[in-house]
Image 1: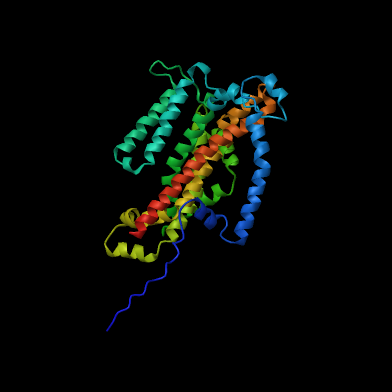
Image 2: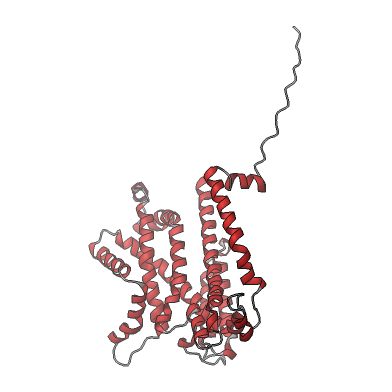
Length: 367
């Protein structure tokens, strides 16, 4: 039997799936609606970006000269207001010659937050590091020891106050929210009722009302001659408000866990708290990572409301810096863009960290 060799016709090269062109074909021009939307967005960008660059960059004034800024009004941005007022915006009414203290305290606190987000450093000593850094933060900010001049809390402001309020509110609100969420699902009527009343009461009023009550109404119920620092009262108010909202997020995660998980824990002979710590809560918290991080971002932005009680955080310090100077008052847009960039940097970082956690959790589930 003779075998005849028949050559195979050459086949076309496989379609390239990596690179810029395949990415654009897949994400920007995948179908007709996507292509139309892409073309419209490109047209809007071509229409808006050139005049925006002209205003923000090419015709902008960057030197701290009010006369040049007045001459450029309506034509170019006045970034000179940032050059002139950035220290008052960043540090608020903190004494000018002592502003190295809030700067160092803020750097230490931000570094602590970054370290705490890296899993490699999730060790028992991290708790001691938190205690040390917070002690350093309040020592630098408050003063009165180690030769540091004392500075009252009502003079704290700007970015250090914003980061401190957001950080401590999140740290205290998160464990409280877990306890409240567990309490709402408790079979003990008294505990369940207390938790329900707390959540519904706090969620039924805006944060401004909570801050107003904490700052102005709460001292009326204190014994005569007894005072509580306004910063502490505001911190407690934000913490309680954030914990109420976060408790509902955690409760949603707990309800999503099948009853079989608790039944399996009971079969193994685990106590209630062992089951919650080792089985239920890890799964529930993994399900609500986006919601929890969204609440963290909301807390960070809601710190701007403390201006109502005369604590000038980042937004309040910006208003304080411009409202007191008629020469720079017309350039609030540039100042708002400056603090908006700061808020965006922190909120975007938290959002990206949330996505990283979600990816890590999905990898662990796939295993």
